[in-house]
Image (cartoon, rainbow, N blue to C red):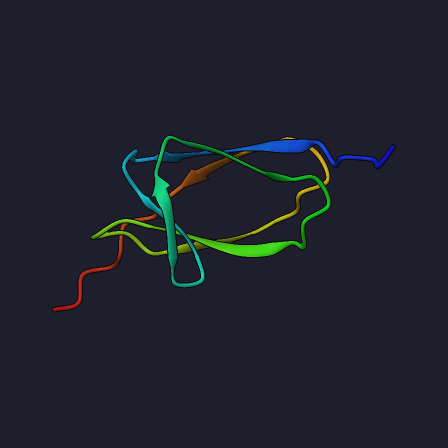
Length: 79
């Protein structure tokens, strides 16, 4: 019987909410966001971004369920 890998559940939450979550050029959704991937998928760098705030990059591994709480910092004024 083949062994089937379980899915892991990944959650992204941000302050403020409504930030875009991207894996490369692919938009995964907006925070709060919950998605699944097969356990053991290669790690990836995800970008969390919202207009007026500095983007944050997070390395996500898919060995276990994970929750990422991101506090976005306002961009400095560019006068």
